[in-house]
Length: 467
Image (tube, helix red, strand yellow):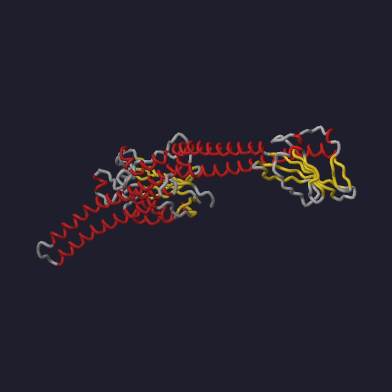
């Protein structure tokens, strides 16, 4: 059977309340019943004390004398307000009974086992009654007989029955009222769940930009759950977008090399050619294959960077690492007759992976050399700036228009400038660089005064907390 949460909560709370109220009512009833017995025993004790002074203990047994002087006349009254008195000898034989016994059935004798005063409850003529037995003792502490004082508890039990009915009705009414109110409250409280469920049904792979409602007038567990699911959907959306971008970018970037490769191969197969011509075709095809391989490697690298939640972190001396990578480009700079300058502060530390930061350094220097004409200048700088570390590469190369500044780190973006188009590149290097820097909590920016006025690439990374 499928029960809603509202129904289950109502049943659970209703059952719990029923048990608690029943236990409380049972305890109250028993305590009140015992208290009424105690009050009635005090009444019987009072009657017994009124009669004790008029009892004489003879060797033959106890007997009353001068009962006419007794202040209480209850022992002469019949009915529920009367007190029925009997005097018993040590063996339990009745030696005296009050006149109000005349119209009643014989009363069973229940002498206690010990001489202590005791009371017992029983049913007499269909009505509840209670007797108090008081031992009559000689001076030598021998029991001479018993004084039995009995009274009807009918009115007391009637009060108990009324109390029991009131408790039962009160419990049923309370549980019913709480169940109705609890069900309404549970439905109202869980109404956002229905809203969340309905909203979740409409979210699919095609509309992951939608979010679950998280504002219900109060910040509670449902709000936290909705926000958690929204974070999950955001991560799924980002994952879908990464896969979609990877697919779109791969298809876009591989289309031209594949088309070129196909054309070369189709043309080469149209007629017989010399070995030298086939070798030329293979070399041309190999260029296209290498271009596609480089593009795929870059796309995979970018996808891994975006998918990774956190990259490894080690204490890295950026000064030492930058000097090491700088030396790899010295020959190339000399071939281009470029003034290749390195300006470093000593012992500048960051927390990152040396290989990843090495890729950042290589990418910046490679781009600077690629887009700087022969005879130009490229300077690499490393310095500390408050809580950050500055990695800066400045060149006197082609530069770019101010409006291009916001697109340089987009995937596959390449300037429309003929000078830029003349140089090979996939347009993914700066995207990979930006992803690595962002993964380590840094920022990257680029500035240029305009075409042919050089460019400045600036990377800021958090300084290592300890070295």
